[in-house]
Structure formats: C-alpha cells, structure tokens
Amino acid sequence: MRYIFTLLSLLLVSNLIGQVKIKCDDVKLANKPLSEVSYVKAIEKRINGQFEACEFKLRNEMFVETEIHPFVSTLYMAYSDHRPVSISPDMIWLLICQGFSTHVNLNTEELRNKFVSFNDKKKLVVNTQFISDKFKKGSKNSPWELAFPMMADSISKYVKKDIHSLYVQSFSTTTPTEKAAYEIALLDVMSGYFEYEYATACGIPEINIEGTKFDWIKIKNNLNSLKGHGIDKWINSLEPIMQQFIDASESKIDKTFWENIFKRKDESGGPYITGWIIKFFPYIRNGSQEMIPNPYINKEPKEFMEGLETNQFNNGLSKASFIWNYFGKEYEMEFLAGFVGIKQDKKSLTLRPEIGWLVKDKNSSKKKSKLIN
Image 1: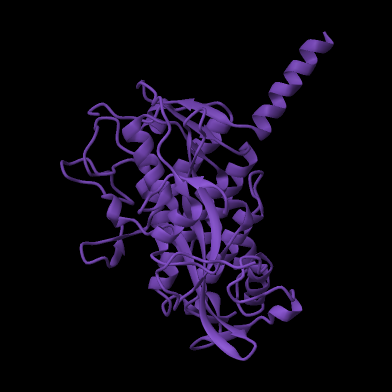
Image 2: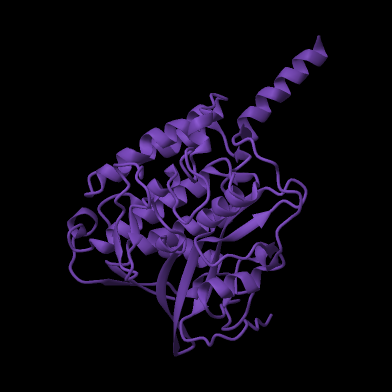
C-alpha cells in the first residue's frame, strides 16, 4: 500500500515539475545528432562580429549552428529531420515580449503617453563601481549579469505602468539566464524613451512541454496586461494557443493542434512556414527587410504559396545600446539577449532553443573574440 501511495505521489509531482511529452507526427525518428560548433563560433556568426562577454554557463557548450531565429530554426530542423523539440514557458513568454517590443519600437511616439510623461529620451546612468570592482574592458569575467537588473529597475521610476514586473517573470523553469533575457527585453521595449549608459514526408515526432500548468496559466493571464496598446488583435490571437499549452500540461492533448506547430498538417516540405508558431511574430520582414505587420495574425495561410519564409523573422535577440564610461574613456556597447542558439540532447536528439545573453562592443572588429581573464 505504501509503495502504491509513493508511486502515485511521484507521478503527481513529476506532472507538476516535469515535462509533458506530446506524440505528434508518425515519422521515423532521426538516428544521429546534428553537427555542432562551439558557442563562441555559433554566436559570433549570428551577431556578425566578436563579443565582449557572455554568460558563464554557455562558454564551453556546443551548439547546432543557425543563421536565423533559433526558435524558428529549431522547428525547421525538427520538422525536416524528424527530431523531437523541447519548449519551455520562458521561451514562449520571451517570444511574446519580443513581439510586443517590436510593436512599441515601431510606434514609439504614438504610445509615448502610455508609458512615460516626458518628451525626447531620458538618460539613465548606472555606476558599475557601486556594483562591483571587477568590470574590466575585454574581460570575460566582468559581472554584467549584475548590471542588467539595476538598469531595468531604474526604468521603473519613470514609467507609468509597472512594465518591469510584467516583463520580468518567474516560472518554474526560469533561471538567472532567462531573467537577464527578460531584463534586456525590457530595456529594448523602452529604448525609444531612454538612453542607457553602461524528405517529402516531414514532421516533428515529439514535443516536450516543460514547466507546470501554473506557468502556462500565468502567461495567458499576463496577456491581458499587454492589451490597450494598439495590438489587441495580436494578443487575442495568442489566447487560444496559450489555452492549448494549459490543456497539454493537464495531459489534454489536441494532437492535430500540436502537429500544426510548424506547418499545417495538409502540407509537407517547401519554403513556407504555415503553422501557428507564426502568430508569435506580430511583425515580419518584407523583401526590403523592413518590418511590416504579419498578415497571418488573423487569418490562416491556406492558399498555395502563402505563409512565411525563414528570412522574414527577426533574429530573436533583444538589443539595448549603452555607453560604458570606462575610467574616462567612452565605449559604445550593446546588451544582447534572447534566443542565442540551439542545443541538442545527444541521446534523444531533442532540439531546444537556448536563451542567453552577451555584451558587445559596437565598434569591435569581426575577428574572433579574444577574451582575457
């Protein structure tokens, strides 16, 4: 009896903190891992240059190389090569935050009165000496992760809404890395108001839904706080998708819905992405690489040659420029955070979009990063 009780307890706990596995397309699983490169090489190719610093845990990791948005690329590779994928609450919330940031940055003046009560840009200055004495130009050990929250917190003093607590969420899967990505996404969305100084049959065989039911409910509830900024149609289109995540966390699986994450079930290969993942991008790039409203927010790409191509998505990185006044010499720098690449589990071959951050000198050369201790 005690054994049965213990087993049931373990099953209950695993459902709360573990993963939900969704069996999707009936395709033959890939049998070998994709080739990988070092994180440094992967990220330098994505940002087209060297970087100042990145988070410690990723420095020695290996990544699957990609030149496009890592979340979209993960689904593309999984769909084409029959590989499982893993999705966390942090990834979905970051997609939503980045989409909202794009909207605000494209409509800065129209939305100014929603967020701030001043004109032009207000300069925010954070003195790194008050944070740590370990900030050194060119050092991989400068504690930038301590600088993100201070700048993000300083925004709260000047904005009308509590945008900080809305953006910087905490889910069961959230680590300091995801928190840093949210903080830089916050700097990104407010950057208009502030200056910062410092084979024919394709398919995805399985989707692992990370986190708990309460994480997904939290994201759905957060959507209401993003309404009223001229983008309600986009927010409304995400609500039924988030309900599917909630249902999946309760083991209520709509197989057809999950099979359509990347491409609609009645399609296979080809260049166009037609699945519901495209609804997480309120703006896309046109042929001139300008950001335009996504025409598929309120309609499905059902006709021949409809849908989005991989080069129409943003790169998945939030960006915030700042000046680093380093002992009297000013450097033009950037915080970058978001989807930095793709990790894979060598045993299960599951692909997972990885969230991370890095710091870049805007005037650095395109040579490989030579970080000093």
